Amino acid sequence: MDSFRCFNKYGTTMKKVLTFTTALGAVLLSANANAAGFHLREQSAAAQGNAYAGATAGAEDNSYAYYNVAGLTRQKGTQLTMGGTYIAPKATAKKVRDKDGKRDADVENVVHAAVSPNITISHQINDKWFVGLAGNSPFGMITKYDHEWVGSDHGVTSDVKTATFTPMAAYKATDKLSLGIGAQLQYLWAHLTSSSSSTGTAHVAEDGHSWAAGYQLGALYELNDSTRFGIGYRSEIQHKIKGKMKSSGSMLSMAPDPKMAAQGAFIDSLLNQRIKVDLDTPAMLSFGAYHDINDRWAIMAEYQRVFWSSFQDLTFKSRSGNNKPGYNYIATVKENWRDTNFYSIGTSIKLDEQWKLRLGFAYDQSAVRYQHRTPRIPDTDRFWTTVGLGYQYNEHLSFNMAYTYINARKASLDTGLTGNDDGRHVHAEYHNSIQAFAFGLSYNF
Image 1 (cartoon, rainbow, N blue to C red):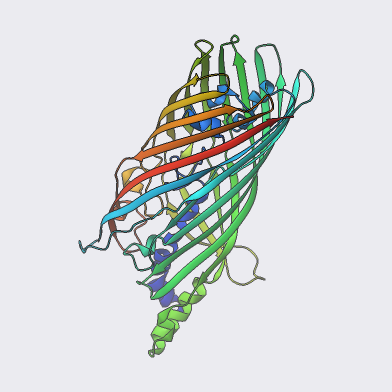
Image 2: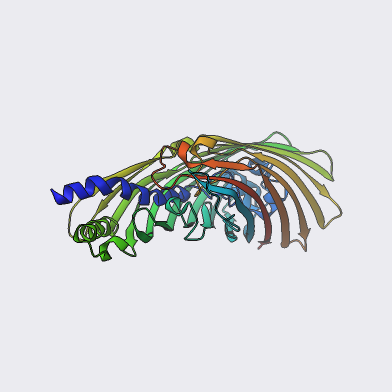
């Protein structure tokens, strides 16, 4: 009976601490790292220069296969493309206050810089068949607050990394139509922490990982030598994440009062166990168009629908020890994300036989509405401005560089609206911007 009373009193408290697991949603996306949600579009320096306008139709080198695998049919012989993007976000939480209106210090550098690498190798088997293998990191994030900040119940550190390997093949069905298919093999790792003064628990950490698979489809239609259209689809990937939750210990367990000490020990037992959560990365559907106006100028456009609505909630289960079969229900965290739209337009200008200038502009819709925004994911709409340079060194070797500035709308946050406000009630305003620097090289053997 004492244990039951303790659980009844502290079961809600445990859920307060478990709000840190909302960051496992970060497994899906890349909180304020770049694109809406946690998606990293930075898989091609050339495509980035045009703000990914026409990415599903451009097929200028084999790195574009991330957006449309059918574009491999435009890559003759054997080609290797590799590169990376350094993403430098700036996010500040201002006007931070608790439910009583008490102000807390502004939090600087909420989101940390990261590198998104990519590599693709492709080979032309004959006039009809082309194959390739790509490696990239399409989802990822690093956010970090001070342990003492007023919203520590909702999250302190979120560090999520993914690695995706995609074997793929493309078939030139006719002179105008190409089709492609690929298999996404994805590894996901997450390290998440929070603190909870309300439970007397100083620090809670979770590590989890998962292997899962999905697929990729694409089609490219070349109306003529100057105009082409593309469609690309990347399926959702269903992850079954397993890991461990650890606590540094409840301060209540050290209390002289035997009842408080027992309650603290019970909390410790709840916060040191194996956990499991199922979640899906979103499916993505893209349409692109590319047109050469003349020998120097080209224009392009892109539309993408990201199906974030698959991320509605997270249900957590746990088991204590290594020998007990099965997992028991802990809690469900509501997320209520929505599908998003991405629009971009771009142009390319050949300055001479070696240099190409790329320009682009994009609008990226937020996956999180105001009433569901959390400190882990202070997501908001973004406007992209990009510029890129391509340099053809010789017939085999070329280089691409790109710079992107992303201006995010001010994001207001009130955890009392989320329905998950089991931790301390937090109000804040987020001011966010991102700079991204990309470099890539392509070699044709």
